[in-house]
Amino acid sequence: MIVNGNGDKAVNNLGQVAFIPTKIMDVLIEDTSKEANDFWKLLCLSREDCLDNPDLTEEEKISAIWTGDSLENNYHVFYKPLIGSALDSAQAQTQMRLYRTTTQPNTNYEAIINFEIDLITNEKESMVRCDGYYVERTDLMESLLLSILNGRDLGLGTGTLSFNKNLSRSCGSTLGINNSKTFYGRSLTLGLRFMSADSDPTVCG
Image (cartoon, rainbow, N blue to C red; front, top):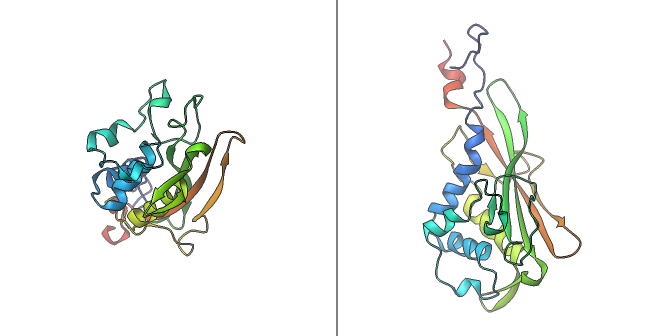
């Protein structure tokens, strides 16, 4: 029970919220399904036949996550919305950006937290072959992400990550990221009903 000096009135402890993006990435790294492996190929391999390549190793997936290096062109996964470096190659312009956008406190105990996932690609690398068809890269990436993450229990707080307008009006998908020249992308928003276990009102005395 978290009381924060206010007597016996428990409140939600949001201290774990900062770790949710890394928990989402843990799911994507550890999931061994075809959907997850294909997602990583689309993210890290720029060729149109990228899905025909061998699956990425766990080490290769982890090495694609930016941790503060000044040279961002070597990475594909970022926990921030801002593009800090000039993207000087087609491969560098294929990225996933994952970050929290809004937190809506419903009660002292419960909050709805929204996470945006931006999927960006170079316009010349935008088409890939899948099951004998040419499909748009970020469209397929988004479909695979939803297959993996929608309804997923992240092991933090309560509730599951959901693509559900009834949970949050912010949930949705929009094609609108671009620099008007070389790259573009779409934004996918997922919601999570969050209540920390140690602020569960059922444990209040």
